[in-house]
Length: 414
Image 1 (tube, rainbow, N blue to C red):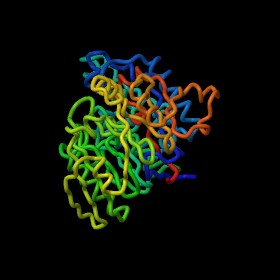
Image 2: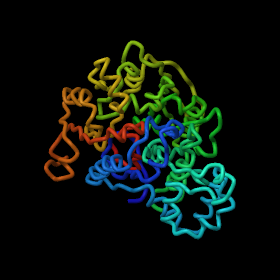
Image 3: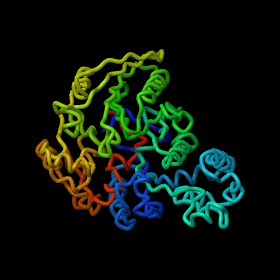
Image 4: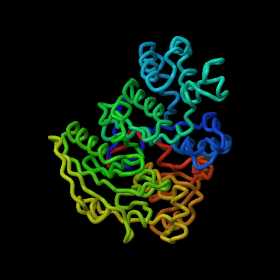
């Protein structure tokens, strides 16, 4: 059925968007990695093999869409192609190349926007630097979660914190407002339009607890003003009230988004980085109550789990790295808290986070490798609580985990 519906983090997954890494991830030198928001350069072959396992598994339990294909379908109509290029020309120096780009087949144009368009041969930019681009490659595009989020059948189009990622949000906004089957009812935040020095917000900071509750990170990439703008918009659009738990995160590389320290894994369990969420030095949390009139009221709560309990959501934490100070830091760095639920009590995560998987095993989860299901040796239906582990050490070097790489569009209601 056409449409979008996200009312939780764990309902049975129906539809999800992925982007398979392509040549764009190798279009950087070691010296350029930091400006492209990477921890390190990564080899395409290894990254692609790891991502293929994620895609192959998810294809067994849901409908998987490729971003490039959806983008190309939207560009297939001439008026929509012209519209997108006009928008893009406001962010990139392609105004004098629109006729050239309009003449390309839709799939080729979609690929080019993601993989990069070199600067005009002989132009000043190209003469000064042979590796100049009119459209820079988008090496972060496989982190689908960052550029948008779905809540109910609405979309949040991310106001990206860094210029190098703005085009990604233009692409996902275009898909979620123009695709004939996957069009959101409305935008709760129009990131490319609303973005300014005070308003940035990314999808990785948005965790959907229920129809009436969300947790959102106040992070390096999501500002307080953006959260309040979103809260008012969401309450007005959904006829509220909404409870939003704003978690004030350290502005550090390891905690760029809330989902790096907190993910929901079952009806009554969450996977967390202890020092940030449950420890004595846990981060400050504020509850924002948004009324259908758009009026907001804000008050502190003792912590995220305590605030959620007060609101009727009683979650028991499973600790990243089993709570061992050494491994909780190491494995959180490798996205050990960044799991992705494809059904209640069934999650995907990187296989390198062994201590975290031990903690999950101790909390009643069976642990299996994705290959067991892809090759038909195991069936998801035979398990209750389940961790599906896949290799992702090269993917992790890009700065995210299973949740970062997935943009769910539809889940079954709990």
